[in-house]
Image 1 (tube, rainbow, N blue to C red):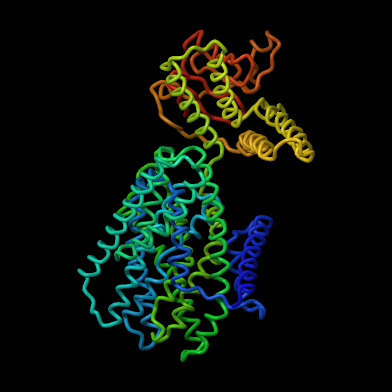
Image 2 (cartoon, helix red, strand yellow; image 1 turned 30 degrees about the vertical axis):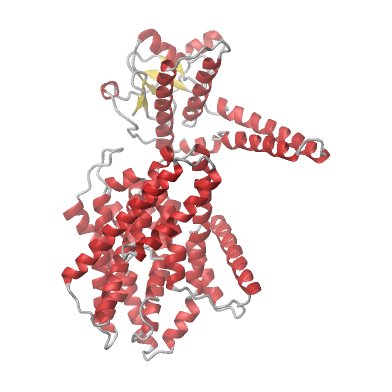
Length: 624
């Protein structure tokens, strides 16, 4: 292909990804589903060039940044909390699937060796990190399930690639030894962890001396490729090296990086992940014609080919379900959720078992199988069938199954309550630090700092609710300020056109306006969504006062009598659980609920707003 043709192909892929993603949002279907269908259809269009994925492009070009982006966004705390389930899926299930699919392939493909049968089993065994997170987060699966899916898909590629390499070595005549297989896996995993730790330590040292967000972001672009390449060069797992480096650097980012660097890196990797993730699904679909034609030119009949491909797809789905339930009840025995206090029901396990979508690593690993292998084209079609089949079958039905089984997604009301509580606790720590500092404040700076802390906290609490048909103060501020910013920007742009002010100065002012606009909290639509939820959840840290004072029925139409007496309006109502006093929240001008606490020292109040059910401890700054 000429340079112009390559450029046209890349532009076409980018435009296709953007259009398909936009359309998927409009018609409310998962983007991976639409992209793979468009790719399959595109592969049969005459003027669309053949796009063949090689193992080098996928394993060294696409996989490292995708793994790194997913690892950085994965909570190390949640990963550790679910490590048993993650390891059982990423190691145990991969081996179980490789053996099961290997048995199916050996039974249906005449004359195929056990080693090659196990090799294709290892190829189709690992679910994909991209597919799991792209679909799981979009449909709103419980965060515990998403964490397990992410953790599984971050590590299972390493298990599958080791199993694939072992099976191909046996096929080459090296012989099979269970001890050697176990040792190879331990060396690959241990070496990968070591390389990842070294990469983390090296980057951490550099980041402590980097204040420039551009240099910091450029460094982060090198990390996944360097960690993967070094890991593979020393015969360790490059996959595990990238995952370990990404998990640790993401976890330590608030300590190692400046705020500007963290913001820039998050935006950069979100963009990279979006482009690569969606391009991968389109590329998978574009392999369809060449793979199907190659399989059709072989010695097997189409009836046999269809049977073995269908059996492999069904085998991957059934084997996963057959593994997750015994693993849950016999080995993992999940404890209560630390936030809800309840054990995950069996429906969570079924959804976890159904969310086994494969991706580009499966297709790339299939190309590792030597070209002189018997039935190689059929093996490639088997891998493609599993990838496309799981994405189209499981990916499209997963939302319906989650709804039918009533598996709840993250509750926006719980998130808003947790966010407000966390900010309140952060502000409490800030005020303690403020009391420890020595300063000479003759200009009222401290009062201004306290006021801004209060305004930030009030805006977070106002997300929960306000009086019906009344605009929250933070929403009113945002609406007015956005209009003023628009006027300011218009004026600055007019001045820029005159050429009387240096362009760099104009750019600085426009950037300041952009930063302020990006920080404004326009949460009216979010609050409307929050009012649809009314679940109870313990958030943050509990305390003796919250455990002592339980929820009571509130007055149907609460009013703040002190506001009425003073001629004021209230934003939201609160009720004291000691004496039943009704008073307005801190976002209201009167702040009578807080004044009531200072006057009486009654520690706990609850919201008196319809559809809400939460309590607040004034003493310990905790909620339930």
